[in-house]
Length: 233
Image (tube, rainbow, N blue to C red; front, side, top):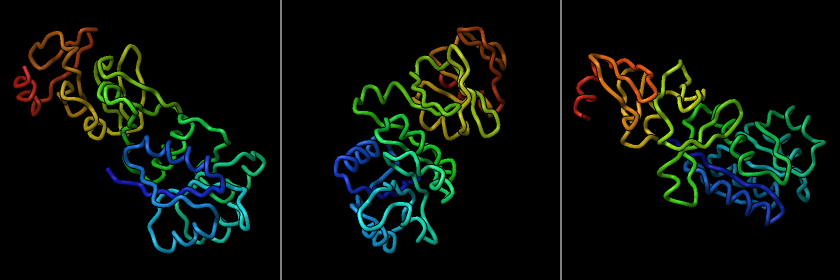
């Protein structure tokens, strides 16, 4: 999983602390600098590779938008501000997202996922304060929403191009490959076909090259995966 290096630029200490706290919840984000003004940002950009810049607009001496206008090559930029009136100008400067203070962790995550889609990097597992919760659940992005899924509610997962279909009591479409998502799942999940992963806890029976789950969904067993399935039993 690629680590994304981040800069925070905000003249308010509390605003910087909130962003640092939010970033700490992400497994592949790292704060390399927390800056009080635009000039500190420029100094860091000259020395370090930066993937994401969380940028306030109203800063002393040089505003966030003025800074963007001076930058020929810039990282992905997420504006963080209390002023909605600069949104149009911000997007004209190709910012990825525009967060209005005070913004929630969920809204922050949406902005990060947008950056990841643009950078085409693997979505991270969101870490939480409770170790027990991280071992039993996962956050996924679907239709501009961040959804928490308990692993034991997932019955099976199906590949769908560059997406996956996650089947619980409903179906959730997630922009991620099956191989990448499988790496985030606990050991009770097993790939049984190039296009299918099942939760072994929901297995009902195996009949030839077909698995029936507890909800009577039938999933094929791929020839190259049959030994893995039988070994698991």
